[in-house]
Image 1 (cartoon, rainbow, N blue to C red):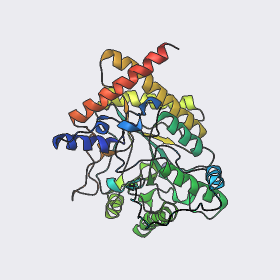
Image 2: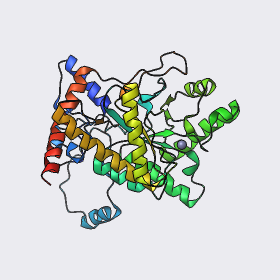
Image 3: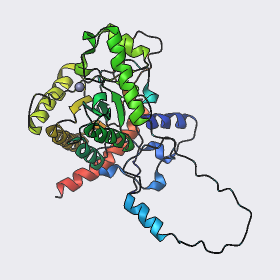
Image 4: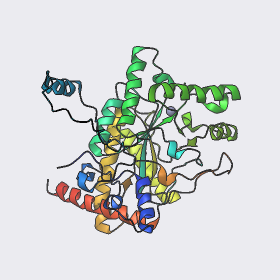
Length: 370
Ligand SMILES: [Zn+2]
C-alpha cells in the first residue's frame, strides 16, 4: 500500500543525506531521490523520512463530511470514568510547516536554469487561474511532481469573488507542496518603472501574499524576464532570489498543446546541442488549458526518453521539485551575479540516479507489456 509520503522531499533533503553520511548517520529515507517521474515514486511510510520539514503531497485536510461523520460517531453523553489525576498528553512532534514561500532559498544569485545535468524543474507563471490551475494541480499530483508557481498579486488580491476563489487556489498550491513566488502585482515590465513604482510593485505584492498565504515570498520572476542592474538591486535589497528559465515553450503565442510541446522540444534539443545544457527550468503558464495539456506531453516525453536512456546506460531525466541545485547564496556578491550551472555532488547524483533507474525500469517494463 502506498502512503501519501513521497519517496524524497526534494534535493535539499538529498543534500542532507550527504551531510548525514559524512556524520556516519545515514538513514534509509535519505537515499531516496525525489524521482518524481511518476506515481511509482511513492514508498511505504515505514521507509519514509522523519517529518522534519514536511512537504504536503496530497490534500490532507479532513473533508467537511468526514468531520461531520466523526462528530456523529462521538457519544453524545460522556461515559462514566473513574476519577484519576489528569495526565498531560505527550504532544506529537509537530511537523514544521511546509516552506511554500521559499524562505530557505532567499538571497541567492540569479538562477538562469543552466545545468549540464538532466535535471528538470517545472515553473508556471501568471496564475492562479480558477479555470485551469485546479486541473494542473491534480495533474501534478498524479505525476508526483512539485513545481514553482509565480503568482500575479492582482489575481489573488481578494477584492471580488473571482480573486477570492483564486486566493483559495493559491493556498491550495502551497498546501499541495509546491513553491510560490512573486510575479509582481500587475505583471509589468519593471525596467520601465521608476524606483518608487518598482518598490510599490514588489512590496504591494508582498502585502497581498502575506494576507493570502501568511507570509511574503522569497523567489521572484520578473514579468517578461525583464530586469536590469537597477531592478536586480531592488530585488536583492528585498532579499529575493530571481528565478529565470532556459526552457521556454512559447505557450502564450499558440492555441494547442501540441504546438507548445513542439516549441519546447525544439528549445530543449537546441539547448543541449548548442549550450551543453541537458536540463533546466521549464516555463509554462497555468492560465492556458493547452499549457496544462502540454505539461502532460512533456512529462510523457521525458519518461519515454528515460526508457531509451536506461537501455543506453545514460543519465536519466530527473524532474526535481525545488530549485535547490540551482541555488547559490549571493553572499555579498553583486545583485546581478548569476549562479553557476546547477550541479549535484556526485554521491547525491548517483543515489538519485540509482533510485530513478529502478523506477524507470518498472515503468518501461509495464509500458512495454501494455
Ligand atoms: Zn508572466
